[in-house]
Structure formats: C-alpha cells, structure tokens
Image 1: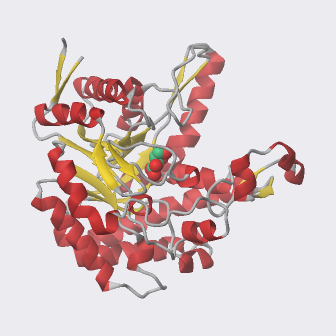
Image 2 (image 1 turned 30 degrees about the vertical axis):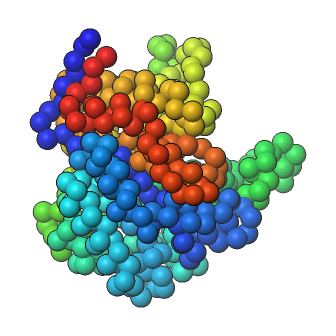
Length: 410
Ligand code: BGC
C-alpha cells in the first residue's frame, strides 16, 4: 500500500448548487424554461432549502471539514434593485450552520441560474450585465461579508456559455448550426424538447457572453474588495484536460483547445483572482485511440487525469482548490475507485509543488442534473425523491476515511 498524505489543514468536503438542491425556486430562467417544457421541472428538488441542517449533519458525519454551496441570485434580488433581506438571512443561517459543524464554507455567488428580470435586460449578452452582477456581489458582501471565508464569483463560465449559446441545450437556447433549420432532422430528443434557435452567428454571441462574464467577475472582484479588502476572491473554472498523444497536429489541437476552453477566459480574469477553483470532469487526449469505461453520463472515466487539469490551472500561479469533481454512478459501483484515483491525481500535483488547498467532491447529494433532470446520480448521499430520505452510499464512507485521515492509500 502506498500512502499519499496531504498537507496539514487541507480542506475536504463536497459541493452543491442552489437550484440543483434547494427546491421551490420559481423566478429564474430555468424555472421559466421548465414551465415552457424545454427542460425538466425541478420542483422541490432535495428540499435542501428546508433541510440544510440535516444535510450538514450528514456531511459532518461523513468526515468533511468544508462544504461548497451557492447563493441563489433570484432569491436575493427577485426584482431589479430590490433585495430580499429574509433570503439574505436564510443564507446567513446556512453559513452559520456550516461553521457550527466545523465545515469551512466555500460560497459561490452565481451557479448558472439567473433572475427573470436580469434575463429580460439581456442577461450576460448585455453590456450592462457586469454592473448588475457587481451590485449583487456588493450587496452580499455588505450583508454577509463578516461571515464568509472567501467567495467565488461564478461557476464555469465556459460551460454556461457553450451550452446556452452553442449547443442550445440550456437557457437561452441558442444553437450554432450552419445548416440552420435543416438540422432539425437529425436532432436528439433533448434538443427537440429544448427547441433551440439555430443560427450560424451564435459564436459571436458566445464570445460576447464570455467577455461579459470576465468583466462581471472583474467588476465583482473590485466591488468585493472595496468592502473587504482581505476577502479571498476566486473564480470556479471548468477545465477540460486537453492533452496530446504526440505529433505536431495533435499538439496544435491540444494548444488551440486549451486556449479556447481555458486561457481565453482566464487571461482576462487572472489578475483579479486570489485563488482558483477547479471543476474537473473530462480528459481529452488528441490522437488517443484508447477506449475508456463510461459513467452513467456516458462520460469517459479518467479520474487520475485531474492531475493534468491542475497543472493547466497552475500556470496562473494562484493557489487552487478542487471545487467539483465526481461522477454519475447510480449503482455506486465505480465511485469508490474513482474517488481514490482522483485524489491520487490531486496528490501527484501537490507532490510536484502545485498549491492545492482543498477537495470538494461533486456532489454531496443526488440532485437536479440540469437538462437531464433527476435521473443522474452524482451524490455521496442517495436521495429517494418520493420520501426525500437521505442515505449515504458505501463510497461515502470510503471518502470519509480519506477526509479523516488526510491521506489516500492505493
Ligand atoms: C456543474 C454542476 C453539474 C456537474 C455535473 C458541473 O459542470 O457545475 O452544476 O451538476 O458539472 O454535470
């Protein structure tokens, strides 16, 4: 057995996101899309809004000392410029509940869902969007700043922009299509339900959205620092670990892919990041013909390659934390091995000098997996959606041992 020990004070936990677990949110773009029949309805989800204490008890029982969650913008600012203090108090209670149990809160301001009023103003296509986002950040900071220990402005800008403006699967459902209308013939069930608007010009809009998101992060950073100059501010970046099997063409492909997926956004925000969160799910090696086992999402399973994703982000020389990484595995047949390999991959990066401070598994609970609804099971804890009963899966106890011992054995 090989012992891989982590630095003292390393944070171990799991992540969730407001819309995916809370339930009862009706005034954001996803709720509107669900009412239009374009994405599955979310309903009460895991009812985490009312059961967060119970869920944090489970996290503590599972050996975690940190937890990542997000604040729902549409709850805090249901109408433009109108802030709901009752909802601010709710998140204050969430933060206190975490701290009381010795869980460090990793807080994200925005995880994909937008208030309806903001969408009506053009969402992140509007040049005004960074100003609205920074105002929201500023409100959270002035109300909750004293309770927070670091804040991430946004989750996965590239995933958000590409699923909403290129693939047409998420609000606002724009799809890149050279063939325009004719593409409909070959589309999948998902796409038929989403009813995307097709256009060959969506890439222009996609890049505009990405630029506005970068500006939104930067303006929010300044707004936060104005209130609390020592607050640790980060961005959470989904990083596909693009790699090359060698040869000039594969290497060029790798560089171009890394540029468009990661550098294009990071170069614009890195000066205003104190730390960076890594969300890791995919490894893609150009020129590789190997076939990998798949998770329930039909994604290749390459957990150890989180190492490459960490190395890609380490180019920015900011402390890193794993803000999400995990798999959908309803039968819990792969999760234990997957987690161990993933953590061994993180350890390899740490050994090579990469400053990684924590690891949040995705996810604490089964939850609403966006366009897939509730069928995909990412949780350490299984949710019975009939009774809302929570049951930790066997793999959760394997992770517990890793968290408590601050090491993985492989
Ligand atoms: C997102 C989560 C999502 C997970 C699994 C990440 O890209 O941040 O919201 O549930 O991946 O697809």
